[in-house]
Amino acid sequence: MSYSSVAGIARKGNLILVALRLPPGEMSYTWEFPGGKVEAGEQDADALIREFDEEFGITITVAAFIGKSTFIHHEKQYELHAYEVQLQSENFQLRFHSHIKWLTLDEIEKLQLADSDRALIPAIRSYLYNINAANC
Image (cartoon, rainbow, N blue to C red; front, side, top):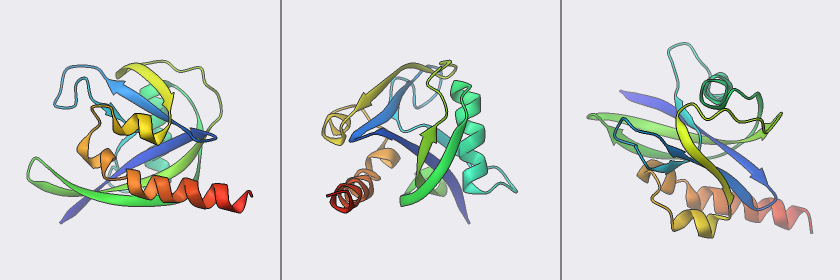
């Protein structure tokens, strides 16, 4: 059985939002693309909307599917689906994170990033390339 998680890729041009997890937990002091587990009966978009509200107290709109990665957590296999999201405000309330940053993918690759999120970088890079090519 495979479980699902979602990651919201918020961007300003070629800058991407990442957040640094607070302790406790295995992901403490790890940078991530915001998101989380998809609960029973939820669609990916619903989970992203809920997660951004829970983690930051902000409303988002879920846009295009970007790509996916797979990972194992507590002996369970997960698929992590990434979507572009648009923030309706930037009045972040950091509830589970100590910092947020807007960085390029090259800068993000240098961070201590969750492995499952790091596996999304090629798909995000391709997505940004296609957006930039379409705008030329």
